[in-house]
Amino acid sequence: MLGLGIGIAALGVGIGLGLIGYGALQGMSRQPEAIGRLQTAMLIALAFVELVFLLTVFVAPGAVAGAETAAQNAGATATAGGSGTPATP
Image (tube, rainbow, N blue to C red):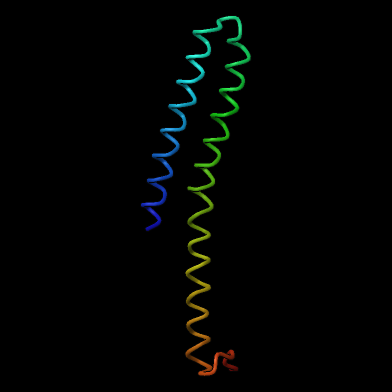
């Protein structure tokens, strides 16, 4: 399931980067005197989109592992105590 999520994130990033580049090139062709400002804005936008993908790749696996661990601990607590209270060793 995690691989599917990362794949969808990669697809979204690819589409986003393409749209950012397309828009910047359209703007540069219409106003050549604004190329410097458009390049700066484009690079900042590209960096933010890439950041979102990198956060997805590196943070999501840890979040999924943490959620699985919490679910396992909750299941162990429910079965050990019987009444939903934590079991005492």
